[in-house]
Image 1 (tube, helix red, strand yellow):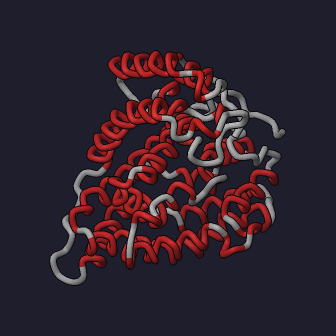
Image 2: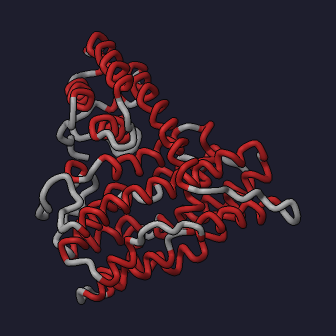
Length: 351
């Protein structure tokens, strides 16, 4: 991914350090850790803080495709891992608070029947109880062509590497839950066909609207909440202790995907885009209707059957997904309804 523009003192200091070699930065890393600690003491909203979220996004990106020109030796450098952990702790705290306030009441798992079915019942109930504003309905009926482009740019931060954060969980699971996750991920990666990978389908949609489909091309244009939504997945996926949360997140993601994707596709068809441009959305209408059952019963439910103590984390991951999705949706809808762009900068042109 291209090196993004800094958004404050922490991301500026981090990106300056990453431009050097890992063997040359011990002193400045200590300074960065102190800077992070000082800024976090004054931060009121970690989830919405552009500087903190960009810094965390770049640190996580070292574990994915990396950053252009950055030495791969930085990935597991102890000094940077310390910085990442400093940022992760308050981020997780804010996510837990957001999750508890996003859902009025989490129903108990039914005592009768298999535990896995009971967990799925609770997750489906949470998905059905989401009554926030509907971005998919707006896209289907009202979104302008420029708003469709903004919508794709927001989604591109995750969709162009779709499935990768959840894949971290595969070696951390066993048995039924592991098999279920592998089955879902195999579909996400196109069943072995590179051109059918969901990230490739999404890139095709971006090109149809004249957008740059290179991963990370629009990191500079999206707000902190868009970065936070992806950072949440990386936090869950990269920390084994949060394997329940990544399972719950994926289950909720799949359970709230099929119908909205149908409406997204309709919004693009309303602007006369062809089947090649809507293939990403059309694929998810069918695939996610199957995935939601596997993710709810076999992945999340199977994990709780094997490890009952993980139920709270499964529910945390699910409700945190609801909370951040609602916050991003509110940001986009509020700006659009007031005739404003939802991006930090003007709508970029394609590379």
